[in-house]
Length: 79
Image 1 (tube, one colour):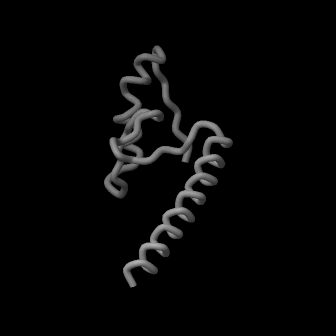
Image 2 (cartoon, rainbow, N blue to C red):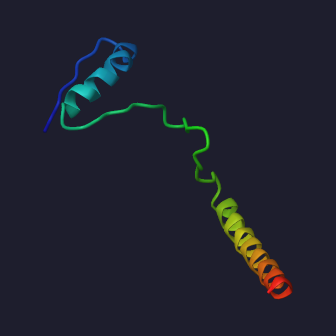
């Protein structure tokens, strides 16, 4: 499919972009438009730096190991 869009200015195109996207999607798709950097509250987002993601994975693994060790010790005392 090819679409040719003519607009007098970028501002005009930006104003009509949402309607255009919804018109192209038609009734077959549910379209929801939101800014690229917008996240919903409580929704985890990917870290900006790769190293940050690696550090979080490392410390999460250490945390899980510590919690498992504590739970094991508690089970030995209680059980």
